[in-house]
Image 1: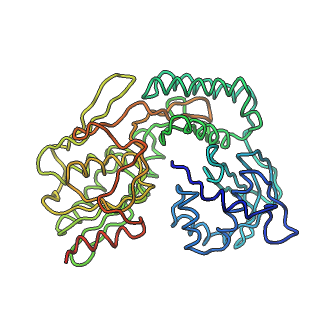
Image 2: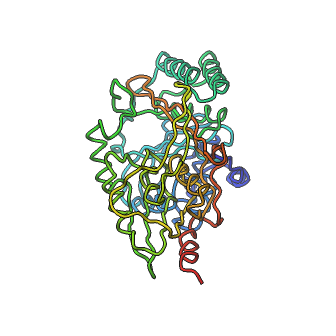
Image 3: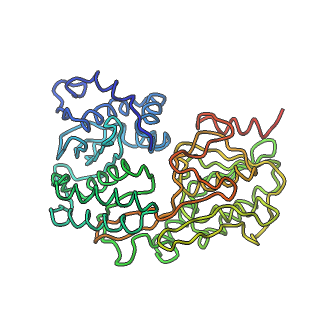
Amino acid sequence: MPTRPFLAALLCFLPGITLADPAAPAIPNTPAGRALASWLEVFNSGDSARMDSFDQTHVPWLSHDKAMGLFARTGGFEFETVEKSDGLWIMFRAREKATSKEVLGRLVVMSGDPADINWLSFEAVSPGAKVQEITLDAAERDHVLESAAKLLDERYVFPDVGKKLSAALRKAEKRATYQAITDGQILAWRLSDDLWAIAHDGHLGVHFTKEVLPNDEPGQGPDTDPAARQRLLASNCGFEKAEHLAPNIGYLKFNVFADPQICAPTASAAMNFVADSDALILDLRDNKGGGPMGQFIASYLFAEPTHLMDNYNRPDNATEEDWTLPYVPGRKFIGKPVFILTSKRTFSAAEAFCYALKTLKRATLVGETTGGGAHPIEPHRIDDHFSIIVPTGRSISPITKTNWERVGVEPDIKVAAAGALDEALKRARGP
């Protein structure tokens, strides 16, 4: 996640950090408070272009569609009061302007660049009700830090970086760096940010959930979790659009690389739907990765067995080759142009798909350089509510002998993500 310094200049024009009404409660004059005031000012304007410009610079993980959807649903937020805060984080109450519903907000800024909002969330609460949170004590905070340190030391893909990460956590534990944080979600976000500042690894992160995690690994997939399976199917396995665009161009937009054990029929139906198209556009601008679906879809695009990627795993000290599958149901899309739309939000398994098809010269990438996450991961349960995602491997292209970690996959045709579909359509339609 690149740093974004622009907001630092903007914030200096917000002395006092209050809302427009002089009688309105003040937002703390802290890095987190200043970021919240700036975001509220822009968000409450409802100005689509202004919100998009601000979010691209300072909240890049929030897509424009989601931001506008949030505004349409809430009408903006009226700040009410601070529940708790520190320099880099703030818990606050606000009221939705359109519905008068009260919400609890949490905002955390990046430690390396406090102008940037690292996390922002809202949950509905009863008016005036006491915040229902799982209050952390020193013993649990220390347990989370020590458990995470041990896992990173033993399993992080680069042993030297793993030692740096574990040393930093143990140093923070001794110094009681996080002692003011009693909210689990904020602790998870702060730990993730501090770990990222060392490793610069977008996959690495600590996670918190109010629900009790199962005793096995928290990352159990939809093949073993009936509820997760149902959610995946209910979302159409991430396939948002399947269309024929004039004159005869297939268009598929899918926002996750789902588990093919569950979603192969959905993906196969989509690929067969566009099989007679003269060109194909795959829209991955909102795709943040997932499972091995990329291998399944790529198998429709090659006539012969093709070596896509290698994956090295540190715990096993072994490398596994990924090839196209020997069989996929229905008809393949062979010998016709493929365009892939990308954005800075395109991440992980979606990037692996982009990188493989670009290096194999099977697709033309149109849009923005992707997020830069090339490390396969393992989820590990820490306790009933905390887990950690540990990158344990690295992807290696059989062609370039490297990957896209931290640098992203560079498109063949660079345009803003919002204009990528128009550009791809122009190219696909030809002169």
